Length: 147
Image 1 (cartoon, rainbow, N blue to C red):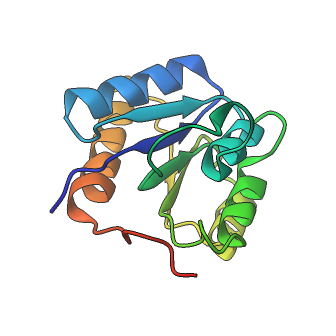
Image 2: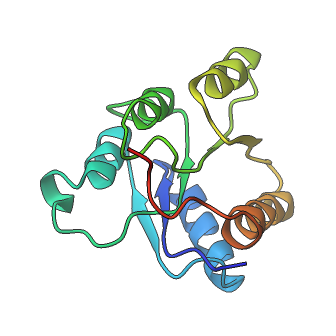
């Protein structure tokens, strides 16, 4: 088992983002957590474009909200899965949406997991902790994308 190098958190809600970051850091699940606010920034980061052209390591996990400004989470997921360099990257949807249509579409597009954000503070923290422990410690991600 190996600690994640980096997690990309794609979240437009400042409170949720801070809670995710604090939980992952307190549980020593990631070396670095990169937070972007919208889908366009997420794609720029992943493709090393715009303000992220000189960013360092590739994330080994993307935690992706669905309801994002500029580019939706589902569109970000679709672009990740259709990119030869990114398609194997683990992506977990972490959203408040319980709509069956969103869940089905997320899995159809290739998400590795779909987690509904609990409304209760303690349950939210526990969900993030479990998500991070599995994807950050137990799961073995691919080291490099297969071209």
